[in-house]
Length: 97
Image 1 (tube, helix red, strand yellow):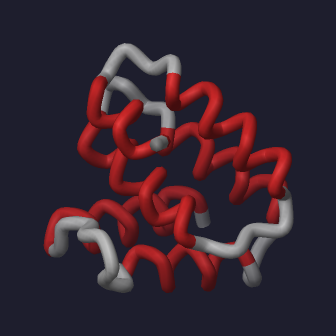
Image 2 (tube, helix red, strand yellow; image 1 turned 30 degrees about the horizontal axis):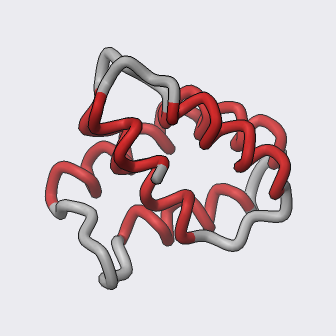
């Protein structure tokens, strides 16, 4: 499930840049997986993807999509943004703002 989820996200993000004010197809992918499997696992996957300095384009795009979603774990998102703001990569820090 994780591999398929990541693959779907990657394809969606490669095809379309995340732009302000425009709903991105990756947001639907995130929503669907949140309601189909263990949410704690999905939050862990999303956290890993959002902070992956080895793939800053992907990380910043996922983080931007996450910041648009109404997630139940607000404290999780706060922690994620705190870590992202300290990332070495400027794209990831910018996405956290």
